[in-house]
Length: 301
Image (cartoon, rainbow, N blue to C red; front, side, top):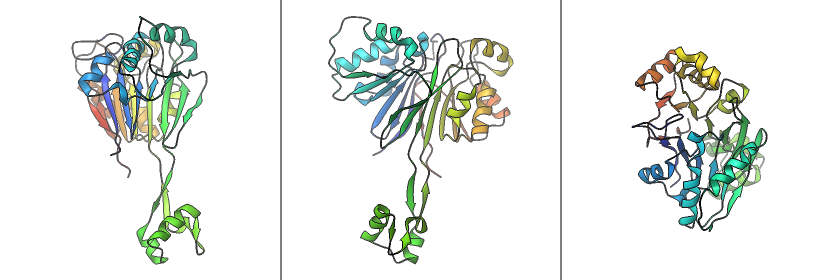
């Protein structure tokens, strides 16, 4: 069975708290798993969430601050300990190559797995597969940072009433799909475009062009909201977003489900992030992330 969901492994910014682990997010996309920003403790959070090393196909790191990358050492060693049988690809800012290498080889262990290093140096596509295209966009943070966007190719939805009107049935349905027309009836006459689903992951950043480009038209957007709106100046100074800013990005981009995360330890009431997001005019589905939450990608309309 195909599953498309976000598994939240950690939601704290800078330091873990009693109730929030460092960052960590797994996107299940049918038969693949993409791990984003594994902070310290991610390996244990994976165990608690029922996520195995074998579930991973890609690791995407936005930037090399500790709360987004310190868990790399443990995750990579676990991948090798469990002898994952397939290749795993790691994406991260090329400017942080030395940090990636230090984390990859932080201690002695036996390498058993093909881990492909695919650093990011510019905006654009990182991988094109039959199931999705993975793109990166530069963000605005004190260290080089990239957000990630996954886009499923558009497909076709066959329309039974139009098929019947043209007398197309049985094996002929497959023929018109494969060949583009049948007996003078074009595919467009008996089907419509089925828009591919879209997911974006936006971590530490100020408002910038990259944030809006990543969010545009997303079915599911995971975005940092480190600060509340009353601390907007502080957020901008440190290269972060507020709850209201993140919500306005989602509102303007037509996001269907917004996931707010990466919360500063200075705030004790998570519901205030939701209140400020709603006050900013976002009316879609909204999740204020908690550790071990699972968020399904919204079903197609």
